[in-house]
Amino acid sequence: MAEEAAASVVFVDASALVALADRDDATHEAAVFAYHDLVRSAFRFFTTDLALAEAHALVLAALGPDLARSWLAHCNIRVLPITPADLEEGRRAIEEGHAPADARLSDAVHLAVLDRLGVTDVFAVDRGFLGMLG
Image (cartoon, helix red, strand yellow):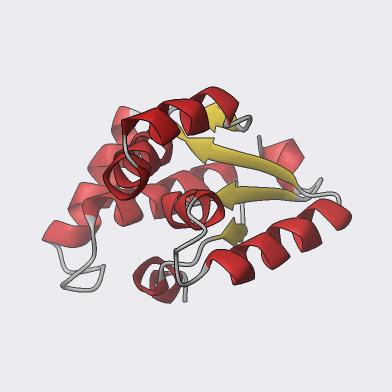
């Protein structure tokens, strides 16, 4: 993945996945615009197993089981697993105060994944997560 980072790879956060799927989401239009812009710029997309699971739970709650099932079946994105080290680094960042006090563990874990892979481009609409990027 480190080599791919140089080839325009972008991490897709659960917030962007949900915003793209839910037309009633306040950030839907901005997410669709950003998605098309990233496609035109030849970015390759990936997410993590953690973000995919989180997005599915949110789509399920917002749109119901039938649409969540269909969304999952059609969600064609490369999914990389988080590692135990990613989880531990994210946990440590929160426990030791290196992350904002209200940071979610999944966001801290995703920062660890980005660091591990050397990826700097992120597609997200979650202000909390975006704020953690610095």
